[in-house]
Length: 108
Image 1 (cartoon, rainbow, N blue to C red):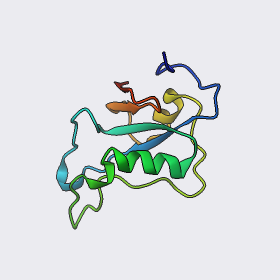
Image 2: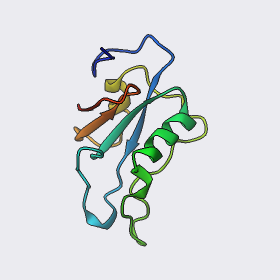
Image 3: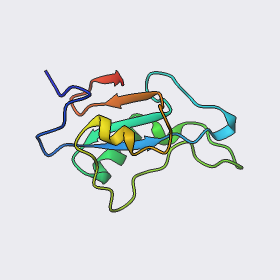
Image 4: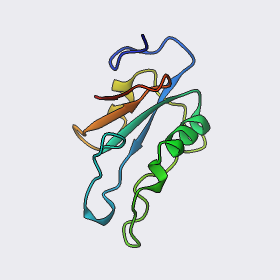
C-alpha cells in the first residue's frame, strides 16, 4: 500500500503542484485533472514528465488565456506532503486530484 494523501513522505519522493488556468473561462474536471493537480515525483523534471504522460499539457488552451497547465519552475523543490503542495496553490479550497508515483489517482 502506498502513501496516503495526508501523510508526509519519508522517501525521496516529493509532491509537485500544477494549478489549472481557467483557459477559455472554465476548468476541466475529468478525474485526470482538476483545478489543482498534484504529482508525486523525484524532482521537478520528473514531475513534468509524469504530468505530460498524463496529458496535462495537451488540454485545450486559448489564445487570450494561454495554456491550461504550465510546467514546474527550474528550481522547484516540491513538498513533503499533498497537504503542503495544495496549500502552495494560489487557489483557496480548490478541487484536487493527486497522481501518486505507484499509479494511484485520488481526489483530495
